[in-house]
Length: 412
Image 1: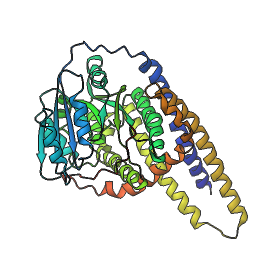
Image 2: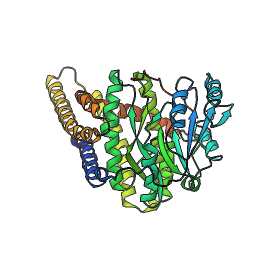
Image 3: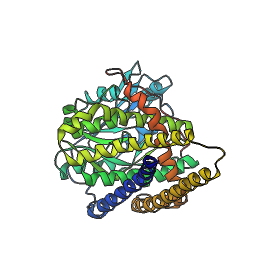
Image 4: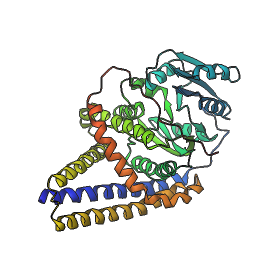
């Protein structure tokens, strides 16, 4: 039983320590970098940006995204839209839009995945900076200015990832994800920025150096999450990924449990594919901060399977007639859950407060923090378990394709 004692301690303390690390890192980032950000100078000379949108079955959302990007005040820009073999009216919608807004339109007849579509767009891009935007996303007007300024401020920048916000907040799942992106995801990116290695750019909204992209051989067509795969390739090629919290975009998130699980399963699979693919390369890089990022991802995976082992062990040793077994086990579970939820609520509240400068009404979702620790750790555990076989069976060289999860109703 000694091993179960140590395992139980690991299951409780690991998420607490990790959450504390995220909070401390986020606070350092906020006070040392974020809060001291200079006022945006719109008149400063800046290079051009090529905006690229890849879309598959996005007939309902693409018009708003194209209109938004086309009407941004950023002076030097071009827009490339790729229809990735859509089976709905996306192509027809884009042809009609092209009569109003001047953009380059690539109409691929077969769906071969987002990475392949983006690669086809980069090859005809006019400018040295590439902004990737999802087909259901709109961008705040100052965002491109904030993002490209990082390339003039810091050396060896490969990508600048923005600060995604949630558009559809009416449902319970929408509200929980609002808390997630405003507190934990933003907090993780702030903390990882202080470590020097961000796990992943946001595929929904990122500005990239075309040179860095080409040095990394563009996006991998056979990785199910092209953004995570590209992020780790950039790290291995010694490029820096920066986080720009002032650059806001607005996206639509799944509002059904099925749609959310489908999305998170793909995220978990993509993360595991990178760990498998880049394991030896990470060790050869001999960078302690990069090793720390790798250890964080690997130990989180071990934590998930430790939960599975613990549940199986308890079931195998379950004595239906032993009252004291129930009492002891239940007390341990309840006490651990209470400590984990309470501490996480405190930590996530602090991160939500940091982020509230960009969307103050998110503080009204404070009440949903009580749901959040269970939601976040539980869904990660479930999806990582089912993702591992998929990640191990990845077919190298095959096009990685998927369908977007459900679209919620946008709160306007």
